[in-house]
Length: 120
Image (cartoon, rainbow, N blue to C red; front, side):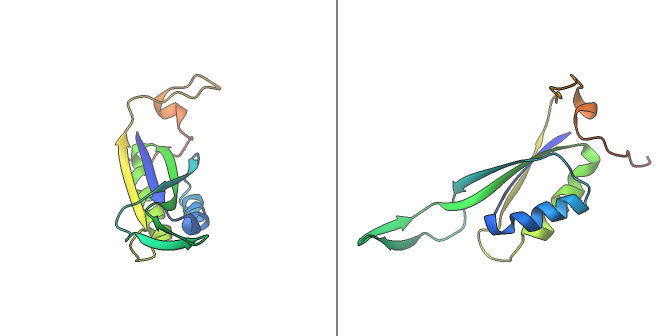
């Protein structure tokens, strides 16, 4: 099991959610965040004062998935979030030791959204 954390542009969120839906990825958390990466800092005038805008608005998406859903999830996010410009975001894949579903007490594989297991 993995935790996929994606930081994307807010204007790409609808496209990312649609791509995840089509990839049959369910169960996610979305947070509005601020940060900076490769974007150049820019300066704006606000009420007559020059202000350096160092942080950009972003959206953080967190999704716990079964191992066989890692690649489809990543591919869906990349295809929908990519604009080709600096600031498109990042995806981090983090191992999960244990997951519990609070409502039922299910653990690990049973606690992530039920999916069909691919043939092995």
